[in-house]
Amino acid sequence: MPPNPTGPTNRQLRMLARFLRKAAVANSTNIWKAVAEYVEKPRRQRVVVNVGKLNRVAGDGDVVVVPGKLLGGGNLYKKVVVAAVNISPKAAQKVLEAGGEVLTLPELVKKFPKGSGVKIVV
Image (cartoon, rainbow, N blue to C red; front, side, top):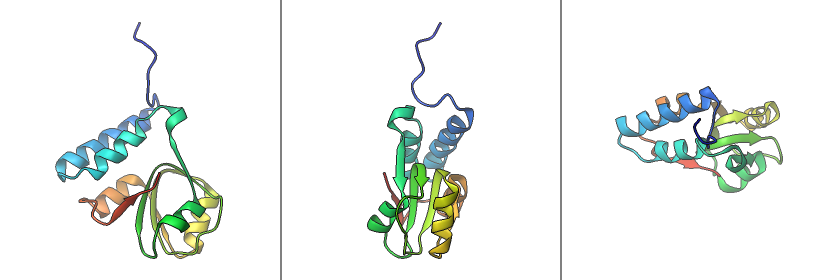
């Protein structure tokens, strides 16, 4: 019997990490590899970011990737394009009300394959 697994046993998360690693190799960029490493972390080490933190660290018109869950705590006053593994309905509503855009990670990779101008928020 193999030892206890570390990282996601969720098949969708494993497939997402594989997709990100392939995108990193195909586009010869390290940002997608770094996001994949965050996605593969064990459950206790996964990233959780509130919308208020996005307001502090992102500028108007920035493209931001959250390699974990985006929650609705705080306020957002800037137009930001956000992609995350998981987004709460309240957080998505706040991003859209601020004039921003909500994407999935594969959509973000297709839109910005080189990852230039994309910020990782942890």
